[in-house]
Image 1 (cartoon, rainbow, N blue to C red):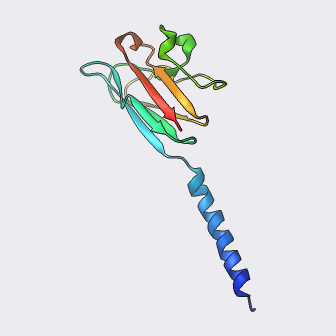
Image 2: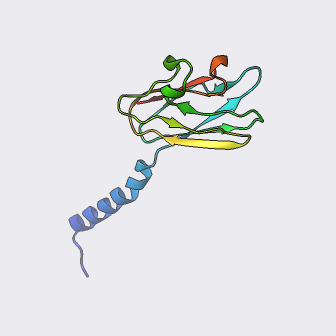
Image 3: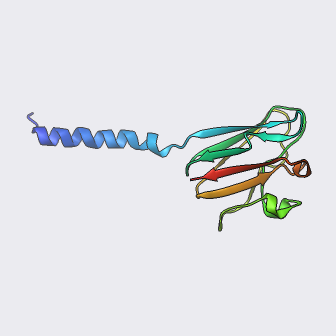
Amino acid sequence: MKIHRRAFTEMVASLGVVAATPALAAGKTVEVTMKNNPKAIFQPATVNIAVGDTVTWTNPGIITHSVTCDPAQAVTAANVALPAGVAPFDSGTMEQDATFSHTFTVKGTYKYICKMHEAMGMVGTVVVA
């Protein structure tokens, strides 16, 4: 069977696009750790990601925490913010070694809290560009 150079090139190019598409579609994962000493914090406090990326929070300590991005659950509503039209999310209580992941599909700034330690300043920010 004989194939023309142009047809071969187009076939190879189309395979390359198909093979590369899943790799491009998968976002990266950014890790945030809950720290307790000297005070309760999210580390890092701010992460910058792209649409489609995932943030995974981990609680390695024995103190219970949460990842709460819901203004209705905050003591101070200004500590929590979501882009317009985005549904709130909450990890629930996270005991030692628990993880919680959220994939961000809308650009904007997300401010979140730990429900148990908001008053101590345990707040974080995800900026999605």
